[in-house]
Length: 93
Image (cartoon, rainbow, N blue to C red; front, side, top):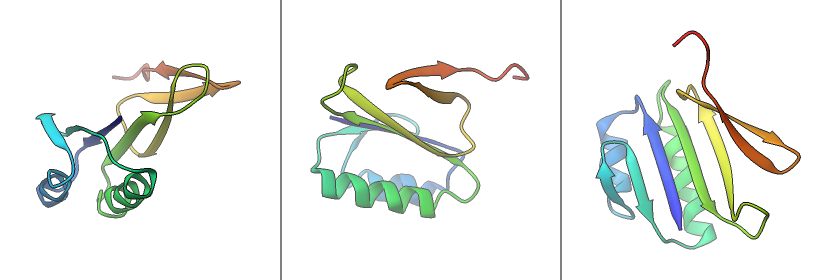
């Protein structure tokens, strides 16, 4: 399972991703793709984000059962504390 969240990105990028994922809410994409397709779509999203932010969560065989990656300016920060992912919200929002 893959969840990809885009913030402040061009509409064309969102349109491209709807070929691979469902978009249940604006900027939130959900689907099941291979690791190769997931990584290529992640690279495409990051390269076309134009100052926005990208966050991807995908299944993995670690303690939490998933991995998280971020790129650019996202509304929340993901911190990795010895393999445990925690979300931090900036104070100035």
